[in-house]
Length: 189
Ligand code: ZN
Image 1: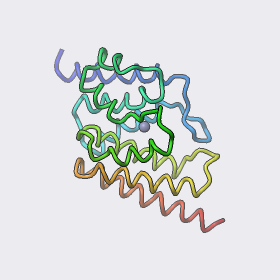
Image 2: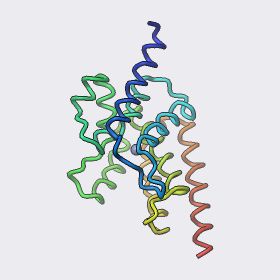
Image 3: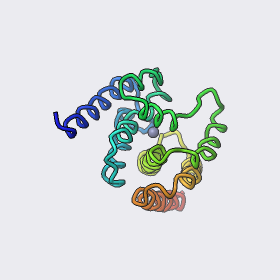
């Protein structure tokens, strides 16, 4: 097989693995979208906006929430996808033994220490989440919580800058649009 077809096979294996792991989970939006939509969006942003072709980065993006949100173990990721993918996913995984507020602060504190691949995944993750919180928020989130969320992502992203200019520009644009949309909703209240 050519290198390209090997890469394609591994990427599809990651999509299938993540889809199986997240199969019973839904996003928090009003339509309860399938969870797998989110990691697919993150990987697609890395490829299309970020121009990233590195296979381990794209595979880690597909798998980025499996440790945090499913029963997947780091060993399992290492066994199926190798040490780099395992490392990148672990880098972007919150420690769920910590309280939610601590985890949010830790994301801000840890961002500058991440590898380039993990920073790019974080950036794409925040782009996707800002878009969701702007257009497709959890129905029980009041406007103030959505605005706070956008503000928090900006602090995490500050620590990821200098990695991928296109992703950073895209984040800035999505954040600006998000803030404008939420400000407009605030005016209507
Ligand atoms: Zn995510």
